[in-house]
Image 1 (cartoon, rainbow, N blue to C red):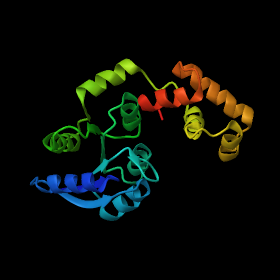
Image 2 (cartoon, rainbow, N blue to C red):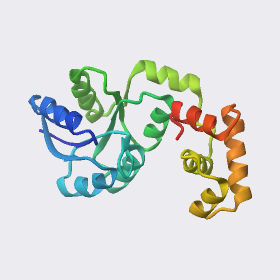
Image 3 (cartoon, rainbow, N blue to C red):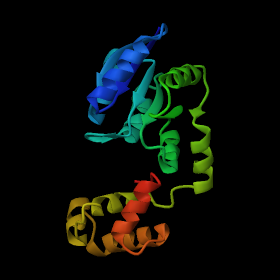
Amino acid sequence: MTRVLIAEDQTMMRDALTVLLDLEDDFEVVAQVSAAGEIVPTALRVKPDVALLDIEMPGGSGLDAAADLRAALPECVVVIVTTFGRPGYLRRALDAGARGFVVKDRPVGELAQAIRRVLAGEVVVDPALATAALSAGPNPLTPREREVLAAAADGSAAADISRRLYLSESTVRNHLSACITKTGTRNRMEAVRVARHNGWL
């Protein structure tokens, strides 16, 4: 019996996934969590064979949690299950150690089959998304540039960002300028939109 942890912030989706996977003869959902910070502590307690992680969750990203989970419990296989089929998210998920990337609009039978395949040692990615990721190329933003651009997403001034991130204002401006150049946009808010659309933030 494959033990499954589901990390999903939407209650209806989380409950639906639990019911549907419990209908499969070889799966048992042993834990559900709704926030990123609950993933690793819960996994260490219940020891799942596979963790299904959403990307956008309260308290952090499922992509960051995937890397933390792989470090804390390497025997647990991670599958990202998300609404956001973006090439940048796929690359980040694979870099974080995820073995599968499934978009939520696929039939649940495909999710069950994807779980079985990753447990058998495969890496499972939607073919169209894999093609898009290859054509999109790697994320051009450095980790620091992503951090600064994410901090600017709410419209904060450079001075506010500099205080929050403990950087000088000139450094913040330099990073924002680099983000604008690399995304081929005219200002920071356009850069945020492009980066989010591509899954770079």
